[in-house]
Length: 345
Image (cartoon, rainbow, N blue to C red):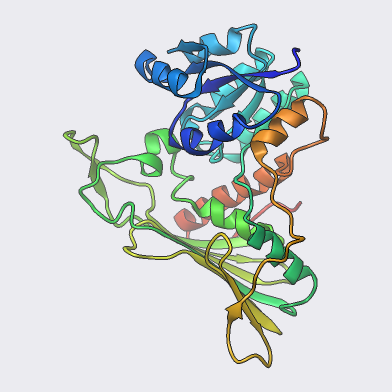
């Protein structure tokens, strides 16, 4: 392999454009070589925007190329399993965006097994944690809250509130499946940074807008994907975590409340952290100390992992496995109307 890790880009959508590719451009040793989108026109636009030498309209041709060491997969989940397995078989390392599978945990396990069989790196992207989230973990560990009893993780937006908006994004089960509704995995990620994941879940889901147009002028099609959900998760011998998610709330603001025997924390944004302990008169701002580190960029970790500079990325396979098991357990619980036990780790 050359000194640089030569990257092939499959599916340059909004998240890749806004976050991943600009970050990769700052990473020493990362070199864009080829891009493949759904059409040659969109591939050429991405190639021009990010100075990629080669544009293709067929991702299978991309993974065969000798000038590609690793692929970054930014498509919706419908293609993740096939693209990951094909790339690993072709001798390429893989970084894949979240919402890793369409339907089940077994897909993820198959990807990891292929990675181990080939000896190649397989990493799933996770957004870096804001410093305030890292600080919360310190506060939990050092007893600021006492014994944590309840956590409420609220995720709200109005992106699906208008029934006239055509089907798109995670609401389109053809590309995202039914398990990957909304962004409940993001709230799981945040809470899991502070506390163990739940051992069992009880979930409710609702689809308020049951039909949408397929495209601006297309026919009305049925929608099965949930646009609101509440999940109660129990940690054995620990807190109860309630994940509340809605994409039909106008002017809603997502936030996290953590309640303990000795105190309370509320986190509502990148650095918007307030707290109070027994004896205080009310919640007050809690500035993040200077010694709290920045969370590492997964793009940089991917390159460093391939080059042997780190032993593993921060967001490990075990963590994404737990997240996927949570997604699947939540879906099963809502459909079956019962508690679902999650695997032990």
